[in-house]
Image 1 (cartoon, rainbow, N blue to C red):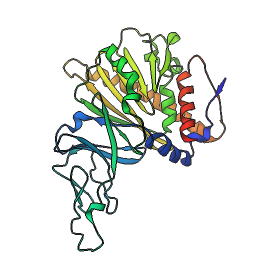
Image 2: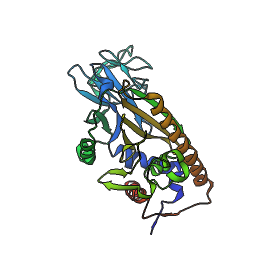
Image 3: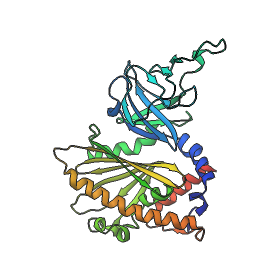
Image 4: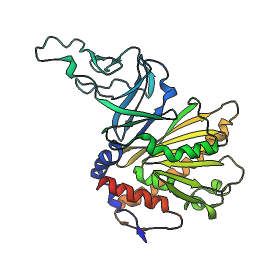
Length: 331
């Protein structure tokens, strides 16, 4: 019998600080798709557990990662999720200008200072790698190759014939719960009969299984013919690839702080063949149902009555794996 993690790990701000270092800064975190930064001066920006980062395409075609923090007084270099900055990155606070490879080009209006050397004030770099066009960043620089993490996904994508085109649509949803509360909900199908009646009518929940392959949780879901047919695969620590017959939806489960989570959805669909109204309606229904239960669970975790429970060996092997890995990362 495996006990769940203690409830304090889902409500203590100090735990979130440990996770920022041990889980998110130490591993590979999803940022976006390289089609969103196709040309020189194009960028993608986001945050890794509250740590602001960006990737910008250089004149040489290379994509480079930096902390989205000016070296002067911590102003942001970009404020949009994606866009075009021209031939340089310019701080939105005092106008310091940086080349696309991170060097300080001009400390605008700073004035003469004998002790100031612009070469010492380049942007802080972030390690960056891509997999099938998806852009990931590693903040501490010590993670293993991204290809090792994503290797199990290669076979799955090949088997399902997943073709990834340009991003069709981005959408976001905010949840009042700890990121782990939502991730663990995603990692099991045990709740489907109770929480998702529409989905339960399409899948055989009695034969629903989640198996672990390296850092990937693969949902094996016998389905009927419906909008939710396909592959669901989750990648440590907080990214899901939901492959349906009409295309791909990437679900990024981003912690905002210890009690708030933002779901960023990226849709890769062919608008000529996909019924976007049906796709988004199904997505909104499932998200709304998950929001209600995850926020209710979080309120109970915060209340202090519940401390630990037990995990089902039949339905919650993915949750057990996640909790064991999480505990090791923040020890």
